[in-house]
Length: 251
Image 1: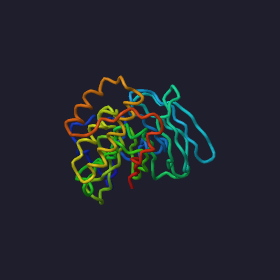
Image 2 (image 1 turned 180 degrees about the horizontal axis):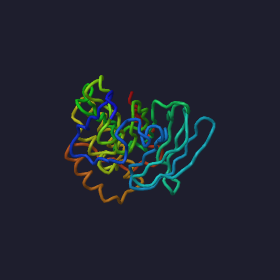
Image 3 (image 1 turned 90 degrees about the vertical axis):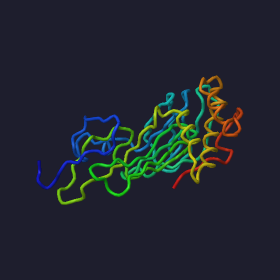
């Protein structure tokens, strides 16, 4: 090994670790250099059709239940989501950044239904305080400082011998199975200063399921939890579910 560098081990325990990547951040299989810039997530248990109009182009594609798509799109645009039957689920503006940008990834999350997080993975002693940012309920995010978008980070990384005794890398990944039930429960678990906003996001996701997947077997348990928390069970609401003013994009 080069004496000017040393290998430090990932701090997190109990996580599934992939050893496929070489032990440096700049290894040939590093995901950042090869991954797409844009991710469209669908946490619902039904497939959806997504149409993106941006930068003078229109793309339509299907995203499977609890699935993910990676369209080649950039700029400011409009996203329309329908069921495969053609029923409108949501429609509204979205930001996908500049095509030449390599510093950030852009995530569009259908009605906020996919449960994913932006997490700092610490190696060695880490660098500062690692953070874990919940994204359940969020519609459109610009995710910067990410080294591993929706792929496992390596178990170890190499840092300079003369540098800090650790490092943090950015990782986007699903929470649990990434589905709407995990997203709703995660939002309802929020007891902090954003609890009210989180509950509104949870109800928006449930409204989408009640409207477009009314026989979903998870609905009774979600209804029971909402009632326990003295929250209203959303009713079926055909049309654009983002029209109710709950759409939020975090800074």
